[in-house]
Amino acid sequence: QVQLVESGGGLVQAGGSLRLSCVVSGSTFRFNSMGWYRQAPGKERELVARITTSGATNYADSVKGRFTISRDNAKKTVYLQMNSLKPEDSAVYFCSVLSGPSVGSWGQGTQVTVSS
Image 1 (cartoon, rainbow, N blue to C red):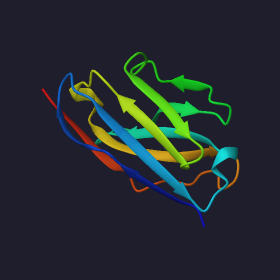
Image 2 (image 1 turned 45 degrees about the vertical axis):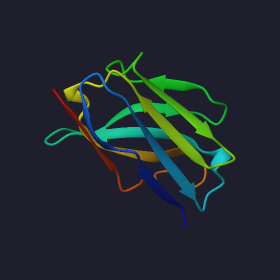
Image 3 (image 1 turned 135 degrees about the horizontal axis):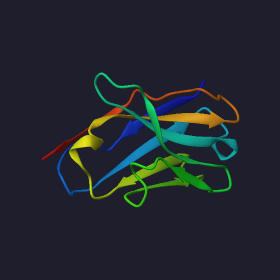
Image 4 (image 1 turned 135 degrees about the vertical axis):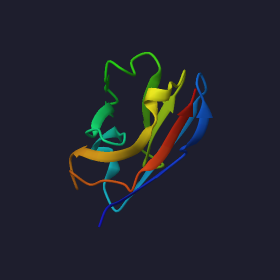
C-alpha cells in the first residue's frame, strides 16, 4: 500500500522560504506523475504544481516564478521549494499521486503559515 509523508512546513515571515518534501513508499515512484496541492481554511483544495515522470512541470499562476517542484526518483521524493512567500500562501500543503500506480493517493499534509 502506498504511503505519502510530507514534511518541511512551518511558520515563516513574508518574503521567506520553505522547502517541502514528500516521501513516497510502496509505489513504483518513477512511474508516477506527482503534484502538490494546498487548501486554506474555507477554500477549495487547489493544485499548485505538478511534475511528470520525465520532469516536465506546471504551476498555478499564483505561484509561478516563486515555487519550484522537483523530484528525486532514487529517494522516491518530490520537493516543493517555496520562495518569496506571501501570507496568502498559508495553507495545508498535500502531495498526491496524479498518474500511474496508486493514482489518487494523498499524504496527510503539512501546515505552512506565512506571517505578514
